Amino acid sequence: MGCGNACGAFLLNVVNLLFLLIGLVPLVFGIIALASEKTLTTVIAFIPGSADINQIVPLSELIKSSAVYIIVLGGIIFVIGFLGFCGSCCKVRWMIYLYMLLLILILLAEIAIIVLAVAFPSTFSSGAKTAMMQSLKDNELQDITLKNKTADGLSLAWHSMQFGLQCCGANSSADYSSSSVKWKPRSTNALAPLTCCQHTGTDFGSISNDTFISPNCVLYGNVTVEYSNKGCFNALLSWIVTSSVVIGVMAGIGALEILLILLTCCRIREIRNKHDIKK
Image (tube, rainbow, N blue to C red; front, side):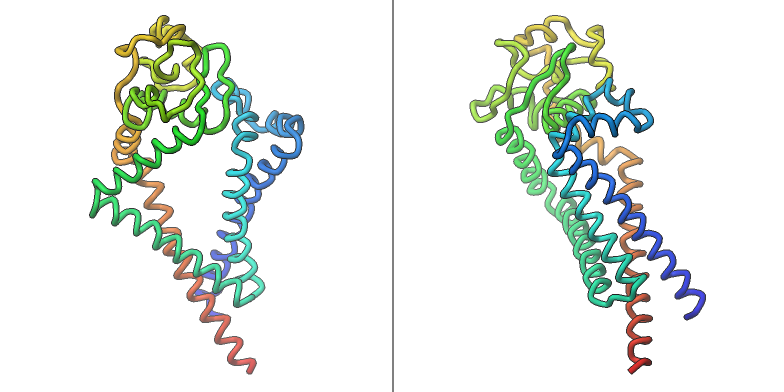
């Protein structure tokens, strides 16, 4: 084995071992969340910074309500890492073939999404906005108050996005007046969730300070002009396009996938050559 092949195999093994461990974390947390909420709370308490996060969102409640999705995400990452690590390290050919196939499919899916967004922006925007609106229709969003920010995972995700991006609904605050959108308001006359109220802060944790929000919107929320009328789809799209961090992360992920595919090709060729020599 040449020095290049040895270094490539080592790098491939290390990266996939990291994937395996990274996938194991959400997988374990998701299983614990389904099995015992008390155990989950105890485990979270040992995580550095968890107390600060709990002041912004109830971390244990968020993990518990999203446990199934967390398990699925962790399981996918774990399986990909496991196939790559065992296939390369133990020279199991069907594993490393399947691993490379999955990498190629993921990369092609990402390229297809980018091409669709660039070539057919209106179609892509319409489809994505419809999907976002459908999530409001299919799930009964729970409103929050300054004293009680407990809600299910999807509701917390919406609240965090609406507050952080200073937006409301998929299209506008009028989405919550639609008969097809069911949600639990903080007061009888509230027109939209508390996080849709116009405010000057961007940190979801600062919502506990009502100086950022009109007191009337906090308590009653029955005045339309007190809500942000900017839709979250356009706000999220604008943030993604203009965020150097998001663009850098996406470029980094794409580059890593291409590197892993190339390293896997070299590893497959090396394993195949050794197998032919043994014959």
